[in-house]
Amino acid sequence: MLIGELSRRTGVHAHQLRYYEAQGLLEPGRGANGYREYTDDALLTVTQIRRLLEAGLSTQEIGFMLPCATGTTPDFEPCPELMVTLRARLHGLDEHIDTLTHSRRALNDYIDATERRVSRQYQGCDASAPE
View 1 (cartoon, one colour):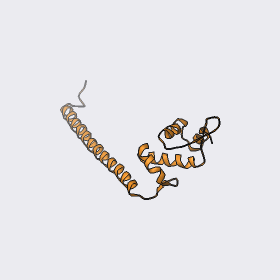
View 2: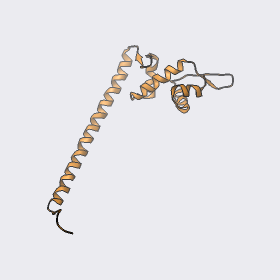
View 3: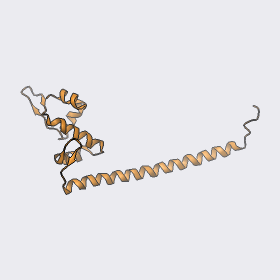
View 4: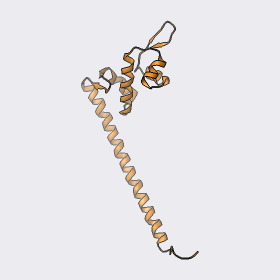
């Protein structure tokens, strides 16, 4: 199938498919006319790539893991290197979440402190006084 058909069937734009190819994630053949030609296996590969991207993995990590992927979920054939990569990515996400949680807490503290100051500032005003 040509890139337009693969794009239509997967819902992935052609420029993204070309990017996946440039990253070594997809390997189309070439027809006599020079056009990219994809096998039906490319449908599964694109689905796997999209799911792994949704999990926050980089295309470099996906390139390392894709040969071990099976099915649309994808599932993986277990191997120590794969687990190291997955656990490292999870650890990085946990650290990022901790940083965001700390930032959120600090922003809430600033908002609370500022709102208390505003409240004290207007507390002495009589809202029912005529203008």
